[in-house]
Image (cartoon, rainbow, N blue to C red; front, side):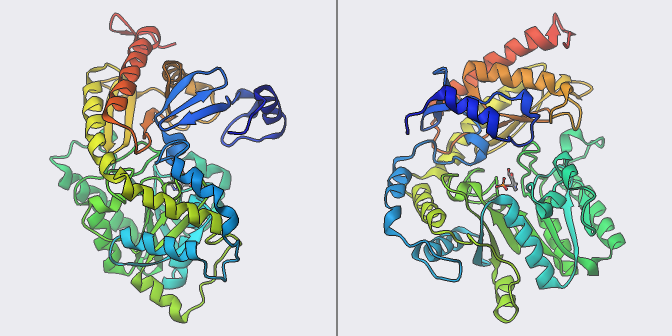
Length: 455
Ligand code: PLP
C-alpha cells in the first residue's frame, strides 16, 4: 500500500470531502492503514474483523493477491468505448450468464447498483410499453433518481416529490406483523392478496414491473415466507408484468448460493447486480436480462447507455473475481460457514435485548429491542440519519468497534455479512466479541437488575 501521511489524509478529508448520508461535522473517519483477508487495521493500529465486508461487497476479502496481480496487468489491455467488443466484457458477460438462472441471456453493464436499477426501470418500460413501477417498503435500491424512487424507506426522501407512477407495497416482515400467522404459507398468502389488490386498483395493464430485493439486505435481512416470491412471479405472469430482482447486495454468493433467487422456485425477468461482481475492487454493476427481454431488443432500439458500460478495467477485475469464487469454493464456504454463523446467532436469542435474528449464508441481521415483550425498538423509524435518537444504536456499534468487530446498523438491526473467505474459527472469534459487546451494552446502557435504564 502507498505510504501515507495519516494526519494529512484526515485533515484533507475533513476539509475537502463530502461524506454520504451524514452531517459532516459529526464524522471523524478513521484511515485504514493495513488490510488483509477478513481483517483491517486503523490509524491507531487497532485490528478489526470486517464483519460487513465494508459495504457488503468485499466478498473475497481485503488485498486478495489474485486481484492485486490483475491490476498489475492493466497496461496490457485496451480501454475502449462501449461500442467496441472487448475480451473482458465478452468473457464476463458469458461468465455471469453461465451462473445466472437458465432463462437469462444477456448483460447490460453499468457503473454500480443504483444506476443498474435505473437502467432496469427504463428497460421494463421499453419492453412493456407501460409506465407504473411497483417496489416495496423496507427496501433500498440506490441513491440516484430512479433507484431512489424505488427505495422504500427514508433514504428516498431526498428525491421527493417523486416521479409519478412509482407505487409501494409491503415487504413481509413477520417479526413485526401484528397478525400471528399459522404458518409461512398463510403469511405469504396474506401479503400476496394485498399485493394483488393493489395491482387491481392501480390497473395491471399500466404496470411495467415489480422490483424487489429477494432478501432485503440493508433493511434487516428480511427472509420471505415460503411461497411468497413464487406468488409474486405468478401475479406478474398473470398480468404481463416484468419481475425484476435487485441482487446488488445478495448476489454473488452472499446467501450461500450464487444468487438469492437460487434459494427459491422461480425465475425473474431481470436481475440487477453490482458489489460482489468485482468484490468492490473496481466499480461495476449491470442488468441481467432474460432471453425474452434480450430478444425484444433485436428489433427495438435499447434507448439507454453510459460512457463506461462494460469498462475494461472493471470487467477484467470481474472476470478474475468470478474465477476466485470458483477456484476457492467461496459460495460453498458461505453456505457451510453460514451454518456456523446461524447457530451462533440463534444462541443470541437468550439475550434480553435481542428481539430477532435472521440469517441465510453469510447474510445476517440481529434486531435489538428495548423490551422483548412489547418489541419496542432501540430506535424508532427514520432516526438513523443524523438524528440524536440514533444514539443508543450508535452506542452499540461503538462498543462492537471497540472490541474489534466492525459493522454497521440500520434502524435497530445490526448487519453481519463478513467476507465469504471467513473460516469457522474466525466466525466463532468474532461472535465471541459480539457477545461481549452485547453483555456490556445491556449492563451499562439498557438494563439494570432487569429494569430498563435506557440512557
Ligand atoms: N440495491 C441494493 C439492494 C443495495 O444494497 C444497494 C447498495 O447498498 C444498491 C442497490 C445501490 O448500489 P450502489 O451504492 O452501488 O449504487
